[in-house]
Image (cartoon, rainbow over all chains, first blue to last red; front, top):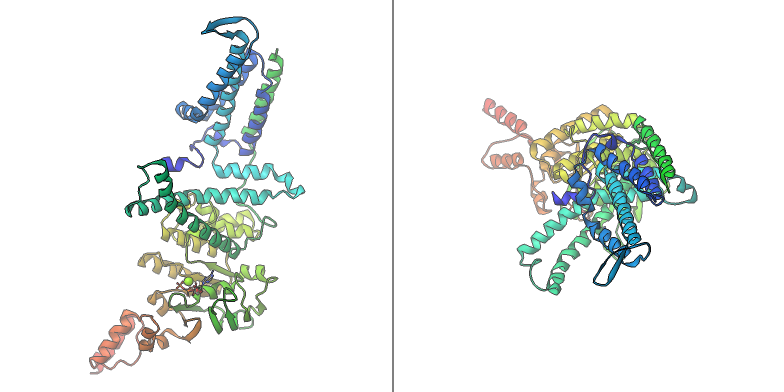
Length: 265
Length: 279
Ligand SMILES: Nc1ncnc2c1ncn2[C@@H]1O[C@H](COP(=O)(O)OP(=O)(O)OP(=O)(O)O)[C@@H](O)[C@H]1O
Ligand SMILES: [Mg+2]
């Protein structure tokens, strides 16, 4: 189970958020990231939080998953909070602990920054929870489409991403196989000093790299044999569709932006 | 017959200048609507021939013609449309993230319309018994299932020639029989030529013609019956003969006069019947 979690944390579902076009999701998140930095009053923060929590609720992703998604950034959030608490020296002194004075403004700013972090991470993790990696890839290809005009290799980038998605599980299975094979020959990955363990990993990495290169070579040949010659003249099986739900989302988001600017102090 | 054939004219090939020749002066023709099996020991050059056929490699000497058109860097894309190929390793030819995407890959490259693709995906997955697996990722499939998908992918683009390079090696005997039957049906329905590289003797007996490779040269070209009549020599170059063929030999040694080289159980049985009733 934990193996399949590594690429993408997609949780299948049929919610409003799942059904949105991935392009819409990415675009909205992009703009959300921007407008978060415009919030400066309790009301405006409240509105943004309402939007984020509302989206999370409609996605029907269990709260525990979202919390798990926040886990790696807890440290960052607490660190920035403390930093603001200590560094900011404006407003009234609230308390003084061991000679350190905590200012009102520090508390407010610390809280605001932490909240911003939370909102950003919540919304972006919502994207990966409700969108398959391949949908994200397709959306990126479409959204970056205009860059083709300046010869940016958009199609190649998307193909690279989708091939990585295709091969990551395969290579992980292979790593497991090799590590078992090496373990059965007496290589010990778990105990010993750090140096010993690094040494033990080498007989794991070498065959893995050799096989990955061989795979890449064979794959390139198979792709050519199957007529692949770049993005030019290619049709696509997977299509993205903008639907009614996307229109609702845009309307909601515009209302949010208007609300935000009305409630700014 | 016209020009619908693949022709090798005195082809010699080596992977690098300083390496030994892998193919030495190889000439043969694959005609329209026939099934040619290719056998030979490991490293005899079978896969190399397959790769030369659709321009993945180019010969240093000699010429390869597909439908009268020489295989060169400028014709290679036309030729790859006509010559479909399934490789030995099913894992490293699986390009899509799901079965459905993989079957579509070749069709996408050829710029096929989406509706047609959807139709062909259903058809070809059905043909190889993989319908219901459309959304499966490759790491959730067995080796044999991946080979089935690879075959479906080549059927979907509907080429004029299909090369199967040990493409059924991982299938169980029943699955292999079913798939070969399906491919035969497709072959007669679409008038295509089939080139199967194999170590499976049963498959060889069913082909119209056999090409036997030995150390980069054509050792023999003929019908399966002609081939298995040369048992001793076959064993000398490291190949085996089918069980029925061996049994027939033993029977001959035991004094039973067999009139022809039986290729399968049915034929041997007929021989025995004839012998029994004329005694
Ligand atoms: N990419 C390569 N670079 C260099 N030499 C190669 C390469 N591929 C194959 N060869 C060599 O060419 C010879 C023929 O290989 P080929 O793969 O055509 O054999 P084969 O008949 O398909 O064998 P098998 O039954 O094992 O699949 C072998 O001696 C092999 O070592
Ligand atoms: Mg081979």
